[in-house]
Image (tube, rainbow, N blue to C red; front, side, top):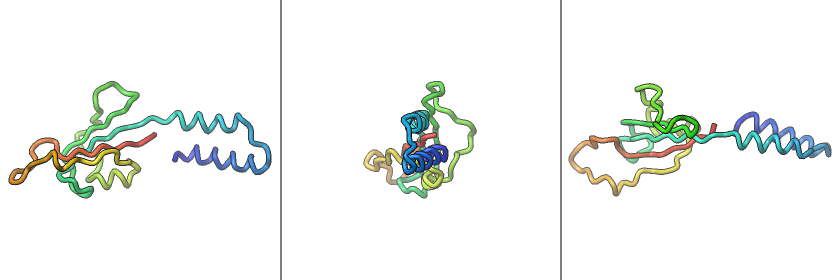
Length: 119
């Protein structure tokens, strides 16, 4: 949760305990919650393991143009687990049954993890 929202909620609890909570106080929290935007991060891993190295990635921002954003050629994390540690939440795990590779290295994008973060 954003620090500002936590602060406002603590303030509302204090005002509630003092009998001074108003509708305006609660509307401030609602406004802060509704101002968040969702980011989607597609990470293409070398396997279904969260610790596996990444082979590719794309970031989607709903407030940006329709094309994915690649701020640099460097993958932003070394693994899916590193992204989770940074606050990303996994929305979708790869489906192993879609990947029938036995004797070849996965030459295309890899195992797709979809993650989200609200900022």
